[in-house]
Image (cartoon, rainbow, N blue to C red; front, side):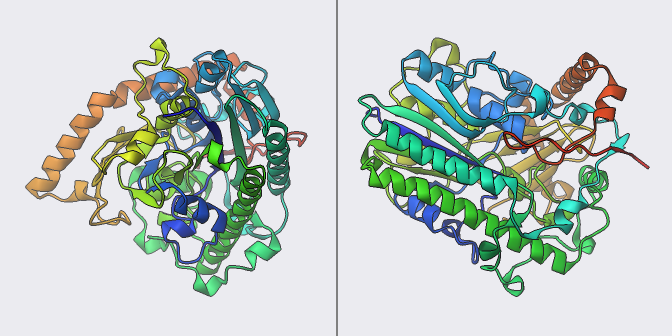
Length: 487
């Protein structure tokens, strides 16, 4: 592969299904649809952790969360473990970033320049996420109650991110050496406020309600029952609330698409398209009321699957790929795109080149994800290949889905007592243990989280600090809310 420029575009909390090119009947994303038509789209792409800080640390390092220890939003990436940015910069490549990073801040992450970066609050983030003993709750219903048309600092920030990217492309249009730009938008992450014109695109009556949205259909698996209780979602929202939420979320997706479209138009206007490869993805998805859950946090498709599109030189045009991939595959892909040789210390990275996967025939492959953060009393893990998905819960029943026959994940094979289902369950649990020791990693994560809390003055100090719903944009003050004791 010949070295070329790389424009890596990432959003925050973009559900994989919320794209026109993914077959969504309503969501209008013409710019991302055109990008997919000009390149390759992956049907089965996943985050390695369905929450911001761990997902972005895995993306940067190419390693699983249990390898790097960035368990939650209170343990942000600090640059100590080398990133793909370090590797590029060490070879003399310009690697700049614009927008959200969600790293610790003030450290060396390998970028040559950070332009208006969003890092965790105060270099600390949200350490109370490490209090997972069931003693605290965070009421989060207000985000759904307030969903609808309106402005937000996140929209304003992403407009600036788009403008900064266009300005950056103009400044580097005549560079003699290939460059990399990491452009990170924060929408469609909540708040669920969409520009009024974008909100108006989506009539509530046209919106299809998500799987198992009604309380009577909720899975009462203990992990999800606790998650609903933790956030206050155990009191169900009505159908009108969920339709309004979807209209707002889809409107934000259209807003995001317009910002990306402006950047891609500038790329074309500067005659950089042929010399630039493009990757688009997101750090995780969004539940949107499916199964009575909201936000990310789970291993269901709504939260764990992410959009992934490649375009540019050497990328097959108009191709759709079934081979499973995940965000850790970005590390070797980025280095290959810029002609950066693989470092000896990266020989054990678990990811593979997305460019090579896109050029090959569809084949089976296993991807892995894990979760150790807010609203979970114990860890849970995902193992997914082309057909089956295992969700393994520490100290709770496993789940197993046949995604070929049951793409909405309505039939849990782990609860079927037939010999075939139980044999599959045992096989996938055994395969999971070849990747990770679930119980040992769960214990290690909790010990690290406890040490983090003690280093910040102990439980009382962390709890008294309060929690914030959304990380503020640069220049915006965080708004903290008090915790509630579990009843």
